[in-house]
Image 1 (cartoon, helix red, strand yellow):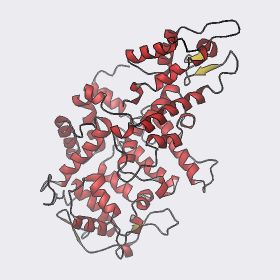
Image 2 (tube, one colour; image 1 turned 135 degrees about the vertical axis):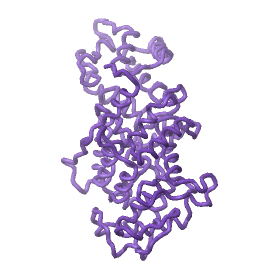
Image 3 (cartoon, one colour; image 1 turned 180 degrees about the horizontal axis):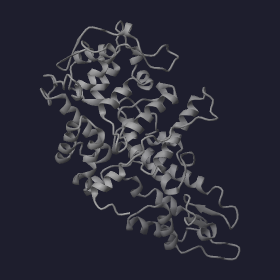
Image 4 (cartoon, helix red, strand yellow; image 1 turned 30 degrees about the horizontal axis):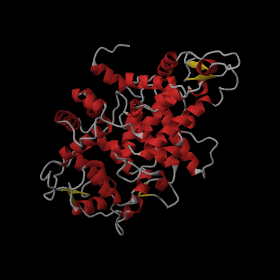
Length: 459
């Protein structure tokens, strides 16, 4: 299908469903929390690999790494699912009902997963806990150094009273008796004075982003780089940097000036709506330079989803979560509240070795039922034409039937997997197959080499 223009192609990519399916836990008892977490992770990765418009899932994974919680502390797959489904449905949003950063962060902040992860369910007037208030500014919206400790204390007071009925009940409530009612000075604005008490926390987000009646705050004089600037401008640049590192290029630790201008303007001019911001990135010429197209190492989740897609396999068959942990990234378990680091973080001997093991395990899963007898075959996905028989791969030693020629074998692997390796990679695989020590039963190593090639590790 030809869409006629880059804008039409971008809009097609962003035409994501409004309500992607949630995970279900049929057959897993409620007290099997670890197993329910496995089901949630596998369901999400299956959606990433098979959704007709999977960019919504990819944006959700960006938010999962930026506004993150950790299942090991949250303790409930259902509460993690509530947060992840928020990101899946509102982290980009469908064409006619897009989301915005303000509402996304407001909602996330009072979900049980975040209440538990950053301890705001323990933030009361009599015993304040600063975790959520600090991370909203430092890691989620503004960046280090663009606020004072007095701003942290004011935001902490604004967020008091958002809690749970009891320690063992995973339900959000607002308890006005535990809320600090005194007005607060926050980033140059007076909050917690004129609106209902439960909205004081929301005011902190609105002031940072400049999306409420009080307008944007001002970065305090202690900030070396951003002194006196609007917090909305600083937040727009901070979020743009985070998104560009995720999808554009991370090695330079900067955003091209034209991209920065286009994306921050899209946020500021559209009330921090997410779709115009992302669209500005995807339509910018700098997104399609050679440096950008080859500027990121695939995150392990991206690598495994690509592996699943190439082989037509499910997450249960291919996403060995214990091995993903060795790669440095297991979904639902970010290392800390700052999320995962980009790019070079994924390149080390142990992590790359684990990727190779993931490839081998996925191939074993794909072939374990197909080699019993000469009529066995390997099936790539649901297309019946994407099939290799055992005789085509190995030949038949009883009567000396030869396997298909190396070049045809490799080209069919490339076609069936949907990959586009470089000429150098293809030639290297052929050279391996031509080595005199390679017996017919070893020819499937070509698939291991194809799925481990450099092209598979570039985002």
